[in-house]
Image (tube, rainbow, N blue to C red; front, side, top):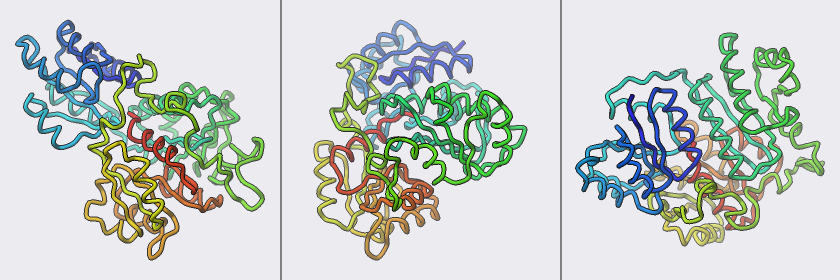
Length: 419
């Protein structure tokens, strides 16, 4: 039995890898920081080390330097599973013989392929084409499943949901499961049940707060014919689903004119980062085990697309302490013409701009097959505008006037989530 050591400060990542690698037949051990990792390498004598680059107590570079100086452990292969790191860092790590890198959020197929190559073994996975994404917009956990149902990704979804639940301290979850253009047959019944059960177990959501958005009669029939989940509403309209989830609470989420209330659109909460759960990565561990956003920011690129110069300067100020590379564009047309468009790690996008508005930008990105994490900035907060933005792949929607701390917190969410 091959042995794998996992060195990562995120408890959920360690838990996921221990469980998944155990299912694959590996013996595993885990370490929660660099110093702990070096000691475990010595004592556990693994066949492979999977580690994050951003570690406390001892940096990844220091750990590798110590490892390379000890004959008994120097030849143990290392796989980096980390947030984005710069080309310069990759070259520096190359001197220690590091050749394999996968980026977070973790993709199970990339992980399995890397392990297979490093240990020269075959790993079987469910290869059903599938796209699963989950995001939180203040009151609703949006889960989108497209193309098909894949057991590996369904399992990872549970960890993603647990991460979001902790990140936002969600006590009463409201869930919208969107099965987008998904052709589901009776043969998929077991996977569909696994998907629904996984969502229920990961979030503890009450059935009345769980809605499914789909045009599939098979899904509707499947849900209605199972007594324990038959009260889940299956709908065909996103606007109806959102109204069903939020309309009954005090004040609803829109007024008589269909304007979305700011508490639905606003991302994050006031207060400090610890109270708001922004640093999920280290939430369960000692305060000393902290790697800041600034540690990874030098490797990240952000675009601010807004015709308001004040907004551009406000966003620069919000991230001034991070070292994050920020480019500003005064129009959608200028942004789309950018030669390195696909290299941005995050985009703040205004909807109303001259020459080319934000919706036109979103359409062009879709047509080109370019997928970027996008947060919409706009003074427009009509219900149909929000629904249209969500349907076009926007994950978050911040209403002007923008609060710098809210923009900062949302960036933390995107850069620090692991799944």
